[in-house]
Length: 482
Image (cartoon, rainbow, N blue to C red; front, side):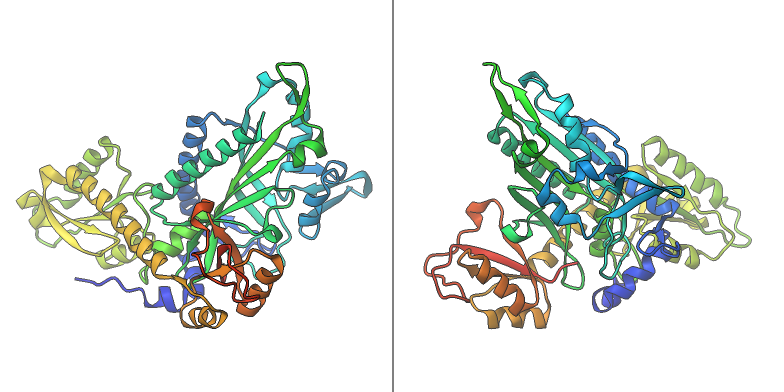
C-alpha cells in the first residue's frame, strides 16, 4: 500500500505550491500582467463550490446580494482620510478616457467602503431601514509590491467577498460581528480548516476601523495565512459619508457599521493545508468530482468493466454524488496519478474479478488506503468514506496548527521557536505600541494581535513584558506571515 508522503510539501512548500497551481489546473500564471492570473476550469469549479456555501450562509442570515461598479470617483475616495492613508499607495488610477484626461480621476476599487457608503447615505433614512445587510463577490485591485503568489498575494483579487452592514447601535453592530464569526466557523468546518482569531493591534487594524479581527491558518512552511477579517467601524465611516437615520423619537443618529471579508485565499489554504507530495487533497464538500471510477479491462476477460463502472456511476449520481468515469485509453497507473494530483476524494477501481464477484475497490485520497466493498453497498460506503475523510483532514490540520503554537516568556525563547520551525509565538505584552513594534523588529515577525474573544487574551498573573519589564496585560501572538 502506498504511503502518504509530505516531504516536499513541508520542506519545499513554495516550489510545491507554485507547481501544483498549474499542474492541477487551478490557475495559469502566464497572463502578461504580473499578479493577475487566469482561473482554469477545474480551479474555478472548486472556488464556485466554496462560494455556493457562502451564498447560502448569506441568505440564511438575511444578507442581500448587490453588485457595485468597479470604478470609484476620487471625490468619494477622499471623503474618508484614514481609509485613503491605508490604500493610497496601492490603488490603480484611471486618468484618461481615450486621449482626453478625465475631469475627476477614478480608481479601481481596492475595497468597496468608499463606493458603497455614498449610496448608504441615500438608502438609509429611518430606523425602519435598519439593519441594512448586503454583500458582493467581485474583483478588487491593489498594486501589490511584494513578491506575488497565486491566490495568496496578487494585484487582482478576483473572488473577493465583502459583506457590509449598518445598524442602529454599537450593540447591534457587535451582534453582527458575532454572527460573522459564526458564519466563518461554519465555513471553516465545511473546508476542514482549523484556525485562530486575533484582535489586531491598533497600528495594524483596517483603515477607518474601530477594531479589526483576523482569522489565520497555519501553512506547511510555518507561516500564517489570513483568510478572513471582520471589522467594527463604529460611526467612523457614517460621519465621513453622512449616513444618518431618523430614530423613533424623531432625532437623527449616525449608523454603526461592520464589514466581513474573505477571498480566494480560502482555496489557497485548502490546497496548502490538506495537500501532500502527490498533489491536492480536496474535502468532498468542495471537490468538483467527488468520486472517479477507473475501469480496468483485462485481455480475454469476458466481463464488461466499462458497463459495470457506468452502472455504479449512475447509482452514485442518483444519490447526489458528483462522479466521473475515466474511460481514457491510457494505463490505470497514469489515471491514478492524474486524479491524485487533482485531489479527487474517492477513487473506485473495477476490474473483471470485481464484476464477477459483484464488488468494487474504494481508494481514499487522504490516506491512500483501499477497501473492497460489496456492489450493493457502494453508495453507503462512499458516504461513510466522505465523513471519514472530512474528520481526518480536520484533525490532521488541527494537530499541525496546535503543534505550531508555542507560548514563551522571553524574546530569546521566541527567536528560538522561529529558527526551529516558525509557527505562532504567544508572549506576554504590556499593551504599549512601542513594546509591540519593538518585538516585531526583534523577532522579524508580525504581531497578529491578541487572542479573541478577549477573555482569552489576559496574561497570567505575574507575567512581565519582555521589552519593558512592566506587568503584562495581554498575551500577544507573533508569526511570519504571507
